Length: 304
Ligand SMILES: [Zn+2]
Ligand SMILES: [Zn+2]
Image 1 (tube, rainbow, N blue to C red):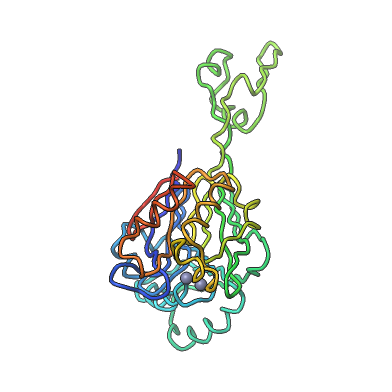
Image 2: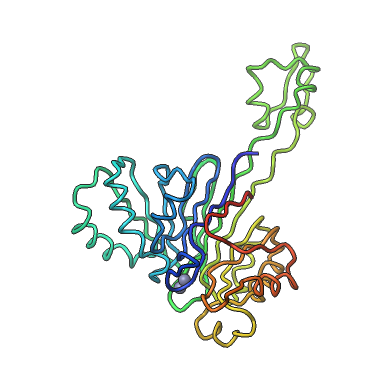
């Protein structure tokens, strides 16, 4: 299977701390790199990680809270210093554009690359990126300001050729691709060998849902249903549920309920408040409802 990996650069909430950087991660799908959120310190974390950051061409910003976007200007400026020439696409709530372009007009005057701003409405469910192997859909979360989650869904590959069957029926090599894409084979004597007899089904497209920052949000379940992995806001434990409701964040229990209701493969908890010296209490709380849960951690890479 081709690469589908998530690398966590930061998974703390609110302000950077000695323990956690603020939100940012890199999603790699079939050789393409996408950044999700860009909190302060993201550049340092990119340097520490093994991510080939010159290959990041698209950045998705969930919402305009500083812990998700304060790293953007500095990173654009550094890309300029490092000699970047490839266009950089920023997918973010529309409100960011006038602020960012004003800052860039001052601090990033001589860039050798273009920054293409592609605004979207965080209140709507919208396809914000699409290519031959992947679709990224934004969907509304429940937060104090308009905020979007992102679903990365790989498109299914073509069917696999059954080489033994192809040899048996005398399929010539030049015809393999057409058959993998769904064609039947007609032998020289006119016999038609159906596609199904010559192939094995394609791998189903994998998917990853980024759901940060949000209060418990059942309305997103239909969008993220069946995701192989969900990254979910887990700012608080259930003991601090009142605080979570007040600030429109989730508890570990909320995150686990969401993963269970969505029938997810795995849950990764993140966006931790600094108030828990040991985040295992969050992990244990979530695992009571959803067993296959892990804690996010800086520089952790997980394979979908
Ligand atoms: Zn946040
Ligand atoms: Zn926020």
